[in-house]
Length: 472
Image 1: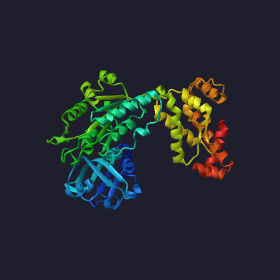
Image 2: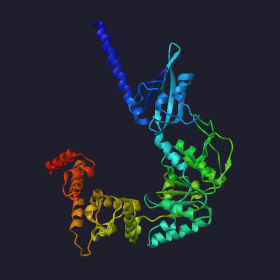
Image 3: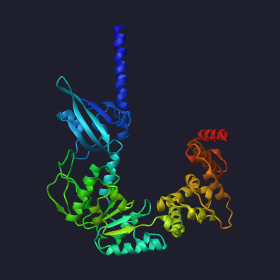
């Protein structure tokens, strides 16, 4: 009886350990003295895109691969009794997927003898890919002044001022709301300058943690910190060309001070280095708020603003150049016609009135998303109607339309805006019902063909239809 109770307690203790291992938000990988996996928790499976069956009881090197000269910290902990703290490691699983983690790794001892090793890992794969995306760019621009669409006086004035800025190497600060196309103007400046044959490097300052931004901008010296290699930063990568710093006001005061020094001295110092390196880079920066307000709220240093804003350009929001809306609509329709292999000719008069009366808080980017969303709902039609516009857009739009056209669809959308918001599940059901009905119409209500087009089984489609009918 006592032995049975002891076994039960051991079993319960094992269950507690299993639950703990699978619920913590770090990867855990344990190997035995032969290099075979003993423990492999859920978080590690997610990080490495593998299942337990792929890894457990398998030889570590049969599952994971490392580039030449890059050994496994887990095997080094086992074979050389070495411990590692905050060590960055990049390797590949047996499917060829690249993985980057920050690890704490230790040998496991039993009475002074190494019986295995444990690795506790944090996933930084996405961040590393973002860094590599910036570091591996070919340095060329996609946009020129010809890419800027608009005939309104507001956009023509800023284009003219921007063209003048191409003649000098002075710093340029581009100010505009989110979605106005600030990078398009930055690339046009680079392309039109005498630096056009040199690299154009872009970095969103709000996209990465402060510690990574600093090493990304200024580079690192080998040994500066655990895992640091000799790596040039974006200033050096952009040598002779242009460095675009997007959302400059997202940088910390410390980094803003370091950036100011780099601009003033025209030199940078890699993290961990003692040598200053001269750089010849034109700085273009962007902000999505008024710089005076950013300075007042301590999000932007005043002295840095004076350095960055030698030339200041203000990109007008779309609501201030509504005469450009239909030109942009035509451009986006042509773009997505090519991408989706469609033949949409334009928008209805009701949709045109709707687009022209809206204030566009998301600016050109929001307009593009509305057109793309509408074209996803078209079947065989060649004109975008009000019913094709994204549901959320129709329900948040208020406008007046007095041109004598049929306004029944528009009035309906306006009336709906006055109603209280419905529960999300009701909205999702309506959207699902609309999309399934459109698919059924396109396939002449042939259940099997419709299910195949929607990526569902026939039974699943029938269940969804029945459920929707019961709720209406």
